[in-house]
Amino acid sequence: SGLFETLINLGEIYNLRHKNDDALQVYQEALEEVRSDIAHASTPLLQTYLWSSLAAIGGTYVKQHNRRMLDGVKGDKHKCVAAIALLEEALGILHINQQDGPVAQVLKVLVLAYNNLEFFDKARSTLKESLALNFGPRYYGEESAQMAAYHQQFAFVCERQAKTIRSQLCMHMEYMLTNLMSCYHSPGSRVLVEGLQKKPQYNGCEGVVVKMNGLRMRVCLDVHDKQEMMLKPENVCPLFPTAEKLQGQMLKLQKLVLEQMTSSKECHRIQIKVTGAKHTNTIITIQTLAHAYFSTNKPVETGLALELLIQADKINRRMGVDDQDEVQLSRALSEVQAAQAQFDKGGVLSAV
Image 1 (cartoon, rainbow, N blue to C red):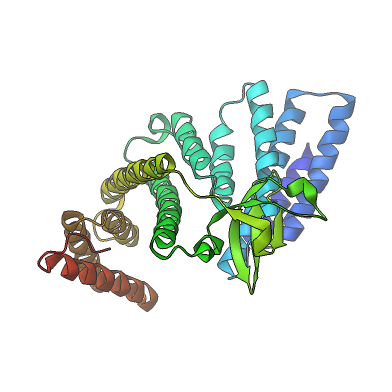
Image 2: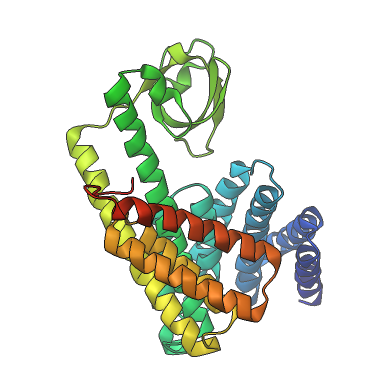
């Protein structure tokens, strides 16, 4: 008992100091000790240690991926795949032992892993599940910092998913206008692998183009380990969306924009209740809500976005927030002002 807790605490200290590799080594040692003890006799305490160590390793894998992304280095998606397997195993142990208390904590980390792999539907459903459990209002209240954080995270997932769908729709529109097959060889396009001689087991797999390198492209395959391969154009076939699929994407995009706006509004409302109007976190929620309005590409909502950003700019100047935040806010304000100017022109129906 004492050794396990010491290892877990040591791993947490390593993670706080961003020494993720050291944290993993400690957590792995803890997991090996627990599995060895369970092989002789399983007890409720050992089961608790088991799910805790699995969740700790999975969470550290996610931290490693996110740290690389923050450092401007390509994230390791294999880490996120491994994290999902570990976190789902931890959830299975919690459900079997009817330990509902820590489930929401594990689900929050699982959401990050799903989001990193662009499993957006799973990320949103997992977030909703966590809200229904002990992360919900019955524990923290309807108007709490935890609830504001939940709505902010949900809005962020909706925004990323909507951005991905828009990219796919724009790609298809470009193909319709130019009839150039190369449109479907750009990053983000979905393709079918075919004609491989050395690795025929991947023929018939679908994937997403993640990078172009000269005449070759790096494709992330839809397989359990997210295998990436460098392929020639003749080994991929674009997956053209049907009219029914395009219509489905448009409807889903509308739903996501609405969900993003609803969560952003709720996050902003709660944040004002918790910290007041003149607070750094409130400025962030104002910008998040403004971005949600702006993403609708509609005149009225763009005007609301402009009003919110002007309000955020005024609060920002009064509080004297650092220059970097001021620059980001100024860029957002300029972008929305430019879009509003386009709407104000006669005969213009859309800023896009």
